[in-house]
Length: 91
Image 1 (cartoon, helix red, strand yellow):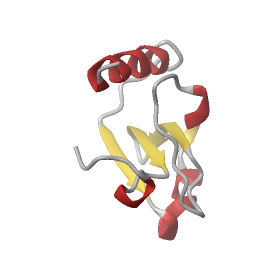
Image 2 (cartoon, rainbow, N blue to C red):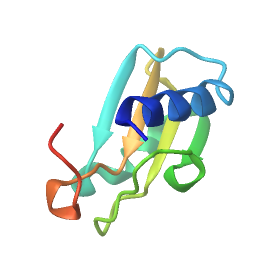
Image 3 (cartoon, one colour):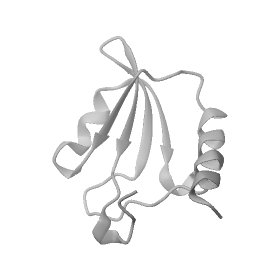
Image 4 (cartoon, rainbow, N blue to C red):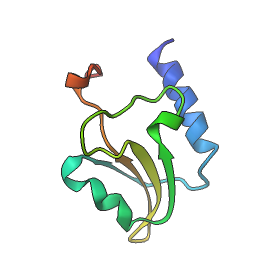
């Protein structure tokens, strides 16, 4: 399957579960992994539930998307990111 097809499948799954349109995206790593706890009206989706979505394997990464409100803005946070050394491409 082409990576674009995976992205479409993942996006549809996510859109079907959230009712907000985030205006800010934040990618959290190990050092600030608990920052998602500050979000109000949280919707959490573990990576393993999202079809076609990669898995974060680094220790300390929560491996989930979190949607909600932070300081009056709708946000999406990636709680865990993907690394080249985990076998993912740089693209």
